[in-house]
Length: 278
Length: 154
Picture 1 (tube, rainbow over the protein chains, first blue to last red):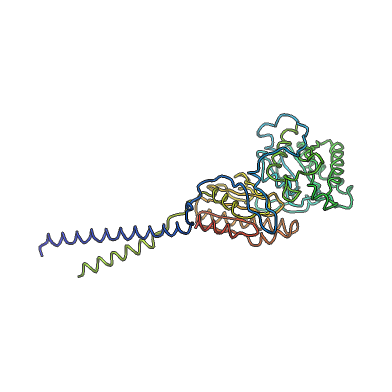
Picture 2 (tube, rainbow over the protein chains, first blue to last red; picture 1 turned 60 degrees about the vertical axis):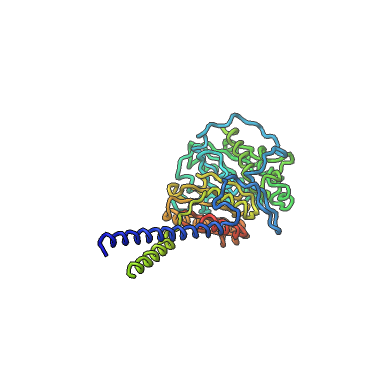
């Protein structure tokens, strides 16, 4: 066999091998793609086509399900008209603000509309456990609310506490502890303006089911908190007036459990704070 | 004859290479996957999306680790939540998964006295890392979320 013939044969064979290899590689990748497509379900796109918020969730047979609040149509039915207040505070107003509260304030933090406010919100927090319950993570370490707050200087401090204390045997103990909290915050944050927010009402279904959580009691606590604010020369914010319905209860569409506010009502709460603080 | 054997070996090697080739990297829209999960899973509470800065704070994340994230939070009446994170790389995704695990532990501490019945959900969350993606779902039944995760992120 001549040298030229040998070279031509080698070239031909190399080309055949490369082609064969490419075909096999393409087949291999194609199968993988087909498997993925089948796994993603017949007729369905392999990736979600849209990032639009869902409109609803399906109910469980054993329990009611709730609509996704982000998609719920806004309605003002049942909301009592509050004092309109002043113009909304400019962006940045809440940047030096601290919000202290329980699980309801935690909800406000989740659906936050107050810029860069700092939240010291803990489930079940009370006017006495602000000193004892180490639940606020600061630099990787859990600290009590009072310990965490004093680590930074604030210009405004908003407090909403009281719903978890309704069952206390003595309302005077609640007020004494609340007064101590205000005094201590004044000491720790001498330049800060302090705002005591009223306790938000609960829904009627919650109110009649538990005497301790009755809205009548909440109203009585709120009158006492207002008096305390006057004594301590701090501001009182009647946030409940923005949230409650005509009967003074939390509207039925404001909450899943009659206590914790959904995103829409947290926005109303935020709007009230923006227009009622000076 | 020798050349024919060489051709067959070469073809077999190419086939092997094609079969073992690195699978195509998953590239999904974390927000759309989170939306799909919230649509498909039954939650007892009302679920609403939260802002990116709140996600970073709630989960104790390093913002630089996360390319995109979407999370839905309940009102606080339950421990229910759903979050999908897209991290900048797999190492970052591992850190995000660890942070999400930390969030579940924090929630356990918060709920054990406050709403003990929520502990069942928190003891059995769906927490999956797949490549650069991390999914966390706390609900009664997370099987629907698992199917969606398998479909889009595996």
